[in-house]
Length: 175
Image (cartoon, rainbow, N blue to C red; front, side):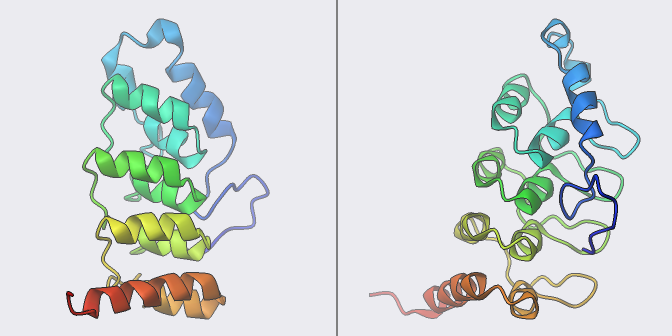
């Protein structure tokens, strides 16, 4: 979950803006009747839905899902549309993808989960949405960080509070 030095990097997933142009060319209106284009993967294994999720393009995400794009597709380094949206802090897309039955605890090549990427990016609303839908707080990245340990290491105090409150709610006896 390290970020690189490439000046085109948009988020922790190393997404370059040039990928957005490729997505747009694939899903032009005249191509929308060809469902095979919806699942076409580029050299990284990204689909148009993944690119739209990575850049926070909610209308495009909705369009692609409506046309039958598979939200469960996994790219070459195990990235998913949910991981990319979580990394970017796009809570509206996170919630939409969760409604489509994606694996909330999917992990990428270095053990990063959507929750870990949301914590890393200090995306409070994404963390809250993922926890509300059952994200597992005990999954650690390959570097050994749980969501709480990562929040502490990065000094994300508001995220720590959200995680602590969630833990307390889990252990609170029903009234």
